[in-house]
Image (cartoon, rainbow over all chains, first blue to last red):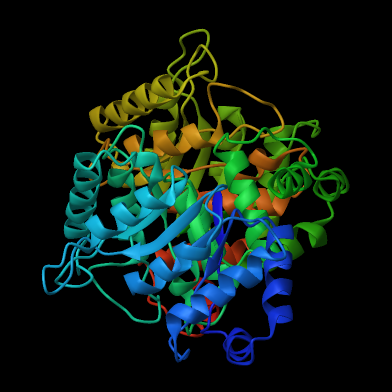
Length: 275
Length: 275
């Protein structure tokens, strides 16, 4: 499982303050803690508060790289901010451009741009593409799957390896009821998306979105993660510091036969991920 | 979700002793505790130690019925023991005959016998049929699904309502590795079995079997339960006294849109089940 650790994000007060005050220690501790907890990538999101988002992204990337070599996931809705991060990132171990819709309101071919940026960043650069287009987030599952198919088809046209593509089916909060796109339907979309290419594209979700504003956040995240892993979810942007969540992840992978059972399977998983 | 509470089983030392000593209190407390915890049915299994299993089954049924009216699930591999239970059970609220394979080594049509017994027991009597036949438990998923199809076809021939049929896909312990029938494959079988009849037969599993002899028993049970509910599992023989398990159950049903989210969704689920 490819775990993209979510915590270095300007939406969190301590990160927002650290960016404003150029306090490296807060960022570097989060980078180290999340790496030790099993992060495959560290998400890097400057949030919306930073005055100069491009400069803030570069400062975050450089600050993290001073202390650890965990690959980064450059997270912004603005291609310019991702591009700024790419200028300073070490892409040798991999980097993810997070994220792009299929296209934008003004018909700008934003997915193409992300593919190009990833190609320029090197052979280990991947992209996260959201199952949304110029009309926004589709209110039904069929349209999401259709957009996923268009994304896969575009990446194929460009000769971009499907293994470098992460498709995000977009989890909405359970607290915002939506008759069309419940979490159960997202699982149905996953069932279809995994067959769109061979090798299959990665599938990812912003797991914590699901429980935004809800009670029992960790429980809700854990239960959905177990369900989604059984459908082939092989990546998540998640709270890697939630040990209960990580234990569910290890158990789900074991039950799906991706790890053999042993009495110490939780420890085995955790050490394998740290290695 | 139809929860069949597993604890009144002669495999547990305190139940075995209670049966031997005719100690009603132990049994009645278990019946009440499990009912309060949300049991839809109480499983009743005399175990293998009782000298006269038929008499022991009748004593258990009568003892439980003295203290609560939760419907019972008469659990034995011997039709005679189930038949003995049926003589004294109050089937007005429902009763489950647990369980029968498709047929037996000697070609005895044991499923037919269970259907007949259920018909005689009244309109609310159901049966649990295991996806195994005279050759034992199939080592591959396709055969299990084929047996499930035969079970459904037999019940249809007999005019037995598919809503009175529970199909048990047979969970084996993760600690006993079996390349063919991993828990992940069982989920694939569930995907197919739910389409065998309309209305669909119920699907059930002996959840605790999965973690038999394993470490992290509750965690393993919880993760598989979440996965299986997302595939349409609507019943389980489980440890209803495991509050963490019951919370996962409530969360899984909420995520699958069977209960609306509210900040108190765990309490809402729990009170609905007790009512």
